[in-house]
Length: 218
Image 1: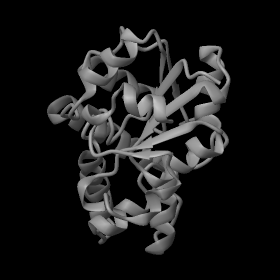
Image 2: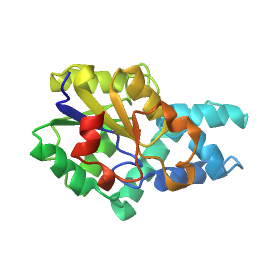
Image 3: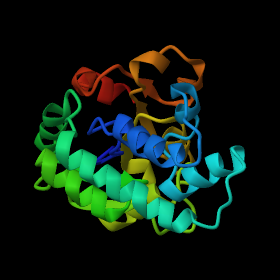
């Protein structure tokens, strides 16, 4: 089946927000006397904020009584940091123009809440390219569950088999594959050589590297 749709993850793929999420999480966890290493943080990349907190609160034996309030604190802090110092990832203008010229439908499917998606879309000036944005924030399940990707395809009016998706995290990659969509993974530099990415249909180092030859080979 011919591909006619592209769906993008957001954090770490379109905007360099993962360090900002870690900064916000570190600020919160320090109140409880803990701090995540980079390796620890990478284990939960791609999860929704509440699931991220539940995982690490359980790991550190932190009571879950304030988790809803803590979730709001982290999200608010990330929005503040994105507005202040969020940086566009390499190749974003290129990849959106690439698919626009091919007349692809373009969507965004993120674990982040809608209010952060809106901030990022405005900051990166990509709203004119996007037909649909979907958030897993209020769904029954977040990534690695495929629902947020399936919802995006449904709203775009296409079948999963017509979609290719760009991701940067393990949980996101699994969500894409579970949705029966093609996955192009762009891991961060430190994790690029890990074998966990073998599940993806294609691995590249930057959005700039994607082209019509690679598209035809999917």
